[in-house]
Amino acid sequence: MARSSNRKDITLKSLELFQICARQGSLQATANETGLSISTVSHHLRGLEDHLGVELFNHARRPMGLTPKGHVFLRNIDSALHTIRKAKAEASSGNVAEASYLRVGSIEDLDSDITPELAVFLAGIMPECDFLYHTGTSHELLEMLKNRQLDIGITTNPSERLPDLSDRPLFRDPFVVVVPRSNDKPVADIVAGKTDLPFLQFSSDLIIARQIEAQLRRLGVTVPYRFECGNTQTLMAMVAAEAGWTITTPLMFSRARRFHTKLAMHQFPGKGFSRTLSLVATPDCSQSVLTMVDQKLRALVSTHVIAPFHETVPWLKDRFVLID
Image 1 (cartoon, one colour):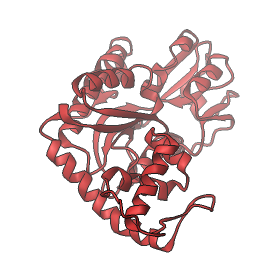
Image 2 (spheres, rainbow, N blue to C red):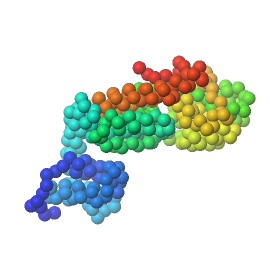
Image 3 (cartoon, one colour):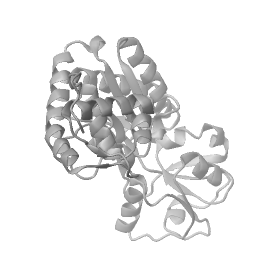
Image 4 (cartoon, helix red, strand yellow):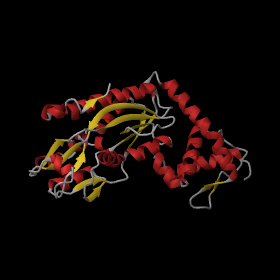
């Protein structure tokens, strides 16, 4: 590529777009992730190549791959961009109102009450900030955080230590048994597989499914199942229709209000167990923003979910709680 005599300076935006496009391998995927148009992404990348005087991408390939020089350039800017983001976060940490961009991810268990109110709160207190919100499974969110596609994620606490990511435990969400309200069998017998009521379980690729499976294995329990699903509402609908029983949590149960008249929630028999929901963040996330989100989340969860259950389900008072 010939060097241009009118080259503009390299911009941080062009470097960030180059990094994303190198990972995604597509202008369309990069545009989708950043909220920019394909033409804008292409303009930044072409400008970067023009400034450097080299081809960074093989534009004829699909997916669009890096050239050898592109690989070298990516290797050198990865650590530089991390340092720049951290410096920007530290520089703005004392003034939340000046924050310019925040990417937040949350599990769908919070998308009916908690996440919408958090979004409204943040928009009001950070008027100059552009936001990106993403809903997904804990596994998806943790991968996005590791790849720096999110700044903050509200997820099930990861079982393994995640390098570079920090986590702040928010609250404990105990596992409970949900059966059809018409059921007259002892819950202990149902969990032990001593009845004909089949087990309706979460999809095996979800973190919550693995936690439940591990607990049942520790108890030496093997229960037949006839249905596997990744959607809480569908599981609750199936239980309400008397198609079986399931293991879930109060937070997830709270999302199925339309079925509550046909459901009964019980303590898990024997030794109880729970999951912890945490606020996970990248190292370049502003600490002042992280603390603000942490405090607001705790208030919202307490008001909308924990307090109502404590009033109506007394046995949850020492189980379904915020973590100091």
